[in-house]
Length: 195
Image (tube, rainbow, N blue to C red):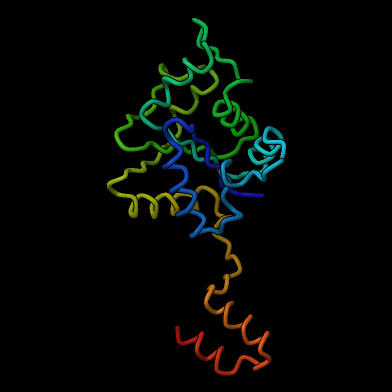
């Protein structure tokens, strides 16, 4: 099960979510990062897959783009009391699940987004306003992603455990080639190590 769950809206945060997924997967391993568009297998029950991933994660990154707050109203037809319809809004359901299962939830504010304020959030998410957030700015992608990864390790040290290193593709190619040709890999392996 993935340790890091990336929560995002397709309308605004999808590109940032995909970039963070790529960067964090390089650092921690692809299997440790869940992003619905990448992680749910074709033909799977997406509702079950999402809820299991939320339950199994250790940390949820909530990608907050410029229009994130306004979409709660338009997606759910919020009533005057600030309640939203959780069954229709997966962003809301995922965050509520993470909070219910007492997972670490980290708001990630994209370029230009102001700090979350309790008065602006739907009732089920008001607690997000007091959580320490991180920033992910398109002008500082490298620095912000390194800092974000460091903060993830601090918040959830399990993800820092070493994963088995994957052989580089070129090395695997030469190993496979030497197995097919029956050369025993002598010069091919030496050549691969030199690359």
